[in-house]
Length: 431
Image 1 (cartoon, rainbow, N blue to C red):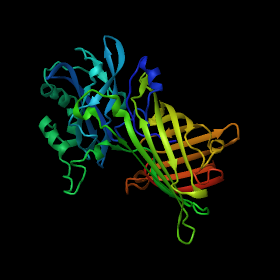
Image 2: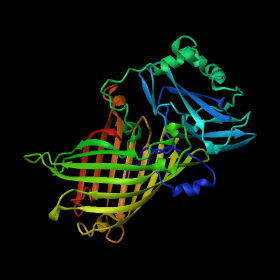
Image 3: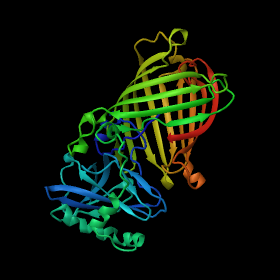
């Protein structure tokens, strides 16, 4: 079972409801700043809405290589007001990209707005963003964003001087953070909504292990936000923001046979609904995902396999020491529709599945998935172990070294009655 990105947080009584809300993705509240990147924030009044607030984020890169920072549509912040603390939701401001590139010994900026339903931040209140490990910062009383920008410069000025050799003005920082290479004329991202709505879903990898009739296993996967994001238009979030189409394809390749045939290809389209997650006490994250999934191997006759399922998958994320995170996600599935191609598949796959993952964003990560049917005593366990290849080699392609094992029934639809043991190794683009 695989989860990907959905990284939104809330708190309070809404946590119970959110456990049964829909969700996709892990980790729930990621640490977006990477090793060697420090994060500073300033909060200020929006001159166009006197009771609203803008949070300006500045990433400072201490490292020798450029860094790409992913910016979620929403992120949780802790608000401290007159001794009380509550979690609030920030939404990425219009004009702020989903990713920013921070040059070596340079910096880049991003802006978030207080979600409309959060109300306003009172004068004197302080705010921090746990996911970015920022200190508490007080609300600035400036009447416009431009005036409050001076506070941001003062806050990060000492660090910028150390990195760049001089304190940079607000206008200079704008030039540096936006001085990225122009895209080629053939870049089809421009004028198409597809790229903005496309995101990763399950892992994408290619692995190989000799000695079987399915030596190589290749997987591609993505999800697409069907209605786009109202946040990009600086509008309040809608339930439609969470509705996605997802697609995963697994290919089992027999490289030991004479003509190198694909023994089986499993196609897996899904309709999923993604909802914000909930953070308890600033640490424990709760979420869930609902989905309608179709699985088929596209063949006919005795080799034909297809199954439909409805599932719910709650998830809990627990931050550990030294930047590690534990994710636990059970899944309950109900098979629906025609099962004539494989009427006994539930006896081999069961209705329940448990996903457990431990690791860190820029280091080692272990992901396991277990399913079991108590009536038949059959099931399977799989494990993926990955590590960033550039960190291992001191440079190189931006991919992951990826090891995979599988033991049990149902590695693919065609062989769901077959008990197999597989060990493979390769590379992954998404883990």
